[in-house]
Image (tube, rainbow, N blue to C red; front, side, top):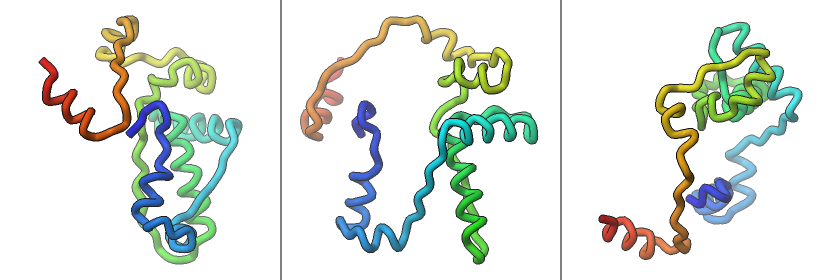
Length: 133
């Protein structure tokens, strides 16, 4: 996965053999703006005393829309993609507090960034991993 372009569209197209009709039949989409996302984070914290990240908030909002528009019984699991501390400045503003960073994040947050450019080919990636010393 190219973390610089973390789109799942390529995976979805592959799973459905590029069949847009099948994709539309089997998936649900939703859109929420910043205001709705921030309100969800705030409400979730007030109700459960748990700080969710913006991605988790979108999942929770989408689940609400799906359940509201679907009359059958649906079980769902929402997985967050990051710690809320990754969005510390935003979360601090939304909740009007100074959230704590996990110790492991405190240790690495000010370290210099290191990156190695590789092309998108699997063989080059595989060779890099096998030859890493």
